[in-house]
Every structure is written in structure tokens, then in C-alpha cells.
Image (cartoon, rainbow, N blue to C red):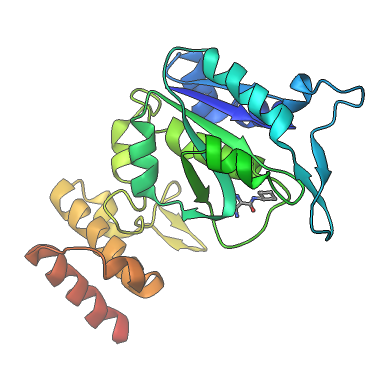
Length: 246
Ligand SMILES: Nc1nonc1C(=O)NCC1CCCCC1
């Protein structure tokens, strides 16, 4: 998969994509992340990328040019069509379901705004999808782009050493993740739950599902209401609720 990022801070994006699972995915050529700086395509003496906003008001707007030239160069750099995403609080809220769909595409573009945003005419003409990572305002789209690069990059086949860890992630089945425990078994902060030491994989799987169901019920009832639960899950959740109330 190829991800092209248009940003005034390309090094920031490159560094985010160079570490950890995503960095390894790039080394394994499972993922390619390229950054494009509109300032490199600015043709005036001052290499302008922004202008004041018509109608007045504070702040600047990223102009149509040189963004449009940058996008044309980006699109031409590889044969695959680009699904271009603009990151902003005005976008559709990003979900794991959308991440999984994006991860299947051969190529996406991420347009990172700065200042007060990008000229609406450029967005209307060039952008395929607007996404938000949450209801708050950042100083630019780069952190949101980094979130998408990470969430999508880690799902590339072969990116995670143990494929299961993607399947058992929070949200992968619509539920929050279960608690995790490592060494030591006994500690002043508490002990590892017995079932996890039992070697009974069926019991362990049941315990983990029960914890995921219970946590989702307690912390994100909105997610739970969207889940279809089979008989076993409904019974496990009921068990958790009974134990929780005591
Ligand atoms: N929230 C967000 N989700 O995705 N992006 C977000 C953001 O806050 N982006 C910064 C703004 C800054 C002004 C230009 C347009 C982007």
C-alpha cells in the first residue's frame, strides 16, 4: 500500500512513519509513505502557500496554488489512483471499520491543512473524503495523518508479527480490548488472574471475551448497543454484570 501525504511539515510525517510497526512495514516494503511539501511547488519569490481570508477575520487560508500543482505531481508519481482524504474536525468521525476499509486500498492521499484551513474550491475539486480523528482542534492535519498512517499501516499483511494481535485489538470485534498481564505473577499491585495461568485455552478465551464485554458495557455502552451478541456472549455479559453489582 502507498500513502502520499501533502504537508508543510514533511519531515514530521516521515519521522512518524519511520518508527515501530509502521517503520518495519516500510522496511519490509509492505507500505510506502511519501511526503509532498506544497512550498516546493510555490512559484512566487516568497514561496507563498497561504493568503488572508476573504471576508476578513483572523488567520490565513492555504491557497489553491501551489496545492493543486503539488497534488498533480503526487498523483503522477505512481500509477494507482489516489483516494484523497482531507483531515479536519469537519470530517466524518474515523472508526476502526473505516480504517479496515482504507487499509485494503492500494493507495491513499492525506491532505494536511494548516492555518484556518484550505480554500474550499480546492477541497471541492480534489478531495474524495474528509475525516476527523475527534471533536477537538489541532494546529494542523499532520497528527491526524499520523494516526491514519499508523492505524492503516499496522493492518497491512505481515506488518504485525502475530496476526492475532490485530484480530484481538479493541474494536476489531466492536468491543473494547480485555485487560493484559505480564510478569511477575505476584506483585504488591496484585496478582495475575488465575485463569490466565491455567493453560486452559478455552477458559482463557471465555474470560477474555467476558472482560471485553464487561468493559464495553461499563465504559462504552454506545458501542455495545451496536453489537450483535450471540447466546454465549449475552450469558457472559450477564455474569459480569451480576459480579460487578455485588
Ligand atoms: N480533529 C481533527 N481530526 O482531523 N484533523 C483534525 C484537526 O483538528 N485538524 C487541524 C485543522 C487545523 C486547521 C486546518 C484544517 C485542519
